[in-house]
Length: 115
Image 1: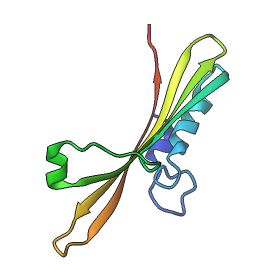
Image 2: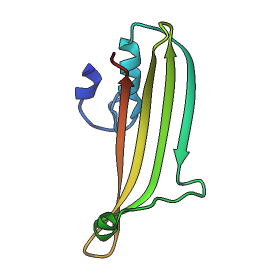
Image 3: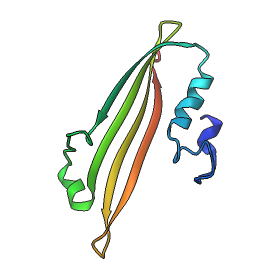
Image 4: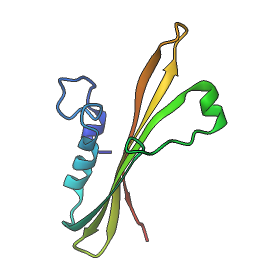
């Protein structure tokens, strides 16, 4: 794991993945020995006239208010391809007083094919 993965949390920590989730992806790119020569970006976001189809269990417990995902297909100088993605699922947790807590569930990762 990149060293940045273990950094402390807090809004004053520049490389905090909770403030900048791309920090983990950037750290991985810095460790990639082959240069990226081309990138294709694919974005999906339910906020732009979309919707999230929740499974029945989730709707009984929480509501998934929003889903967004950005994928970067990165073509390396060696001819290999890797994919990095950042996914944010906004969850709404109901409270006993009827209010909702918004929780951003963020996942970022780098995938490389291993032959």
